[in-house]
Image (cartoon, rainbow, N blue to C red; front, side, top):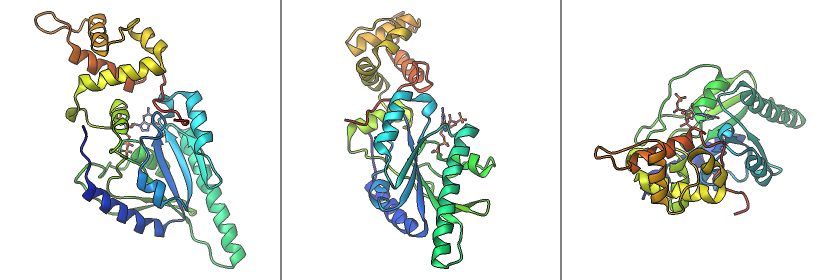
Length: 279
Ligand code: G4P
């Protein structure tokens, strides 16, 4: 269903390998609604020996109980996991505190070794649309223009200094998720991380309705009433409930699909998480 580009991926992987040599730690951002699908497999593999702050972002749109489960499943000695809403000051402050702590630990270590300490260097990574620019802009305290992150657009490494103690490396290129797994493509499309123009909307919405019928039946029922189990019939009901009709008066299932996806993505079905840590 979705194309991926091995050439770009190889290039991005090499660039990441080089970039990793420059930094002390990684700030990885994922989407709290799909913590598994929004992982970049290269970060997981190449960055496994680096200390990491892992941010489950857009937590305002995710199921809080499952976010807590994900936090405990992903935390380890070398990985500190936080949930965040990159647009909120409280989250930005929490991330900053983690960075300052890492910086203080590094300064202490350098002192013991008798070397002059430099700022802690942190590489910021995340697949497109997880909120990387929002977070960097909030951290840096400026509304810098969005650059790159679109296929075909490249940009150079950008170092961003935060006070005297932290330097962020904003990485160039696009980090792809694991598109070989069809569930990954579906989950990312459902949360709106993939351009809708290239997607069969009714099929995607049907998959989404089926997934929510398993995971959050009460959220679906509260919004649209009890839905038929057959996904197409469900779209017909959503069309009727919202008075979405084609010219001749038939229910417009394509518009119903778009409406469902919009409701899901904007949180109008409630705060939902599409993946469990245990599976
Ligand atoms: P990227 O650099 O990783 O590609 O992502 P970016 O920061 O551009 O964020 C993608 C979209 O997600 C933006 O919305 C942004 O406002 C939104 N966003 C980022 N962090 C959060 C969060 O924690 N919670 C929620 N609910 N949204 C978040 P947009 O619609 O593209 O733009 P706009 O609405 O900000 O204009």
